[in-house]
Length: 217
Image 1 (spheres, rainbow, N blue to C red):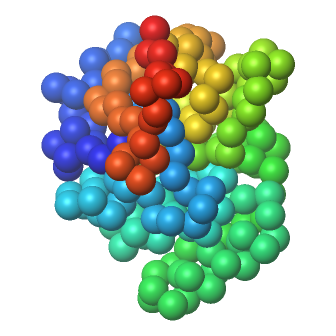
Image 2: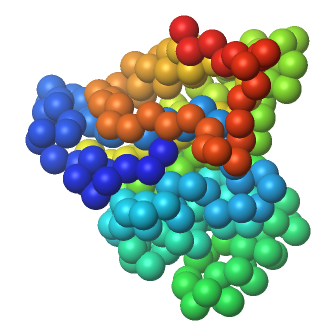
Image 3: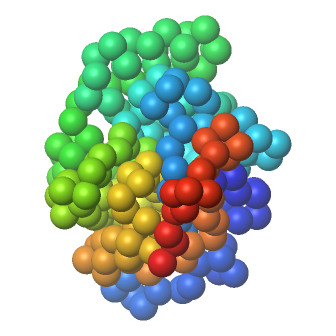
């Protein structure tokens, strides 16, 4: 999901001008997560990734150890990070202190927190959604689709006009086409015009066996 600064910054050339009743957003999608093992996400550590976001307010959801929040914090005036795990948030705070960056790391259920932020009228320039796998088997796909749509819908409602949504899935059982459909449905319900500016798959440290190819349609 590495994006160049040109692609990440919203502009009339990147996001379509909406009707008066609609807002725009740009999305970067990544259909294989890498943060569950505590590593820094590839978009942030690859050349140019750390320069991708220059936002006033960044919201990092399912932050785990702060993989997105840490490298992006120097580019933002305010960073809020959520995770349901108290242990993960403690590590995020420790990592922020070690790296000399300021992150408002909070323990909370992302589903509840997104709704709460909307009720408070909070808005963000960039939002990162990097949840754990919602569909670890085929039986969980229906509920996973509901969950992915819910967090993307809520995030899109919290974005400022022209904002950036970085949305990720590491659920093998929800392929790229299905995930794109979920994000589209969320944008319709949120009444937001969305332009996809970048799509990424897993990197070399997450190889895919040819005996089990990943369908993209």
